[in-house]
Image (cartoon, one colour):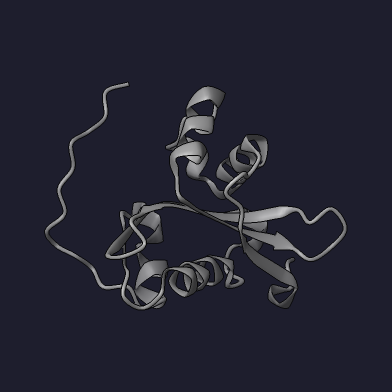
Length: 141
């Protein structure tokens, strides 16, 4: 079990792709992300301009959560991943990452995201508003 008071939140624009992959798999998002395509994961990290991490404040500083986003730092930020290792889920790490995103972006920048179906309750509990008018072009490949 993870003690939430021992979690360090930080901006890590040069996050290691192996650590990113590990948290995606451990969080359950690995089922919907290209975790077996290292080049694509590298590109995903490299083109994000907001990469926030949650690490345990213990020896080795193990990564337990990641928020990855794309933003203009003036109007809106799209959070493309909010991943928390299963061992740390339910302990406030996801909310901590979203709070850190809001802190770093400031009050003038809105945050948008698309929730996985089983995470909708989490986003409602932390105070995000549901938006009924979202649209999507599916990727091919």
